[in-house]
Length: 138
Image 1: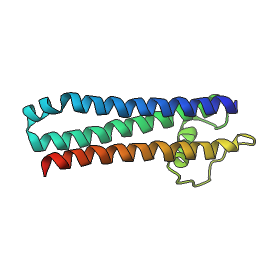
Image 2: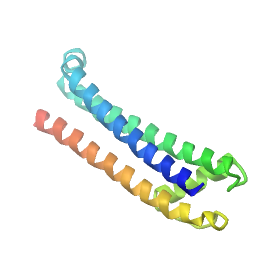
Image 3: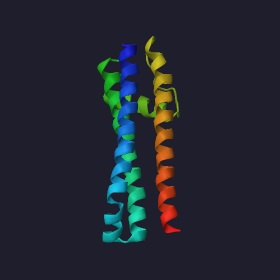
Image 4: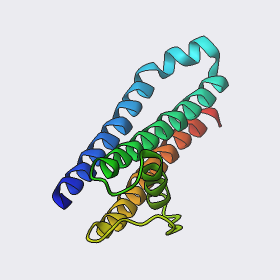
């Protein structure tokens, strides 16, 4: 089952990178049309806001999939507890009030590493998007 959890982590990394590249592609494809329809400055605000929302939704979806996995394996008492554990761990907040039973405790560090990497990629992506918007608007 640990291998299954590792495969889930790899699959979620892959999906997260697809989201990043698809969002980047859509931005490049529709930027000019958006600028024509709403104006130059408003387009930049919409692009940055849209990226925030898409990445927020991606992170929530990833946390929900981990919560479903934890519930499926009966490692938490319910989906809500799994979602709480996942989000606290992925964000490295780490309260420690909900823990997994042995030998599943190794999933905590795996989730933390996965969270740091995906949030780091999202942050880098948002930086690139904002840098591009600022370069065009300054």
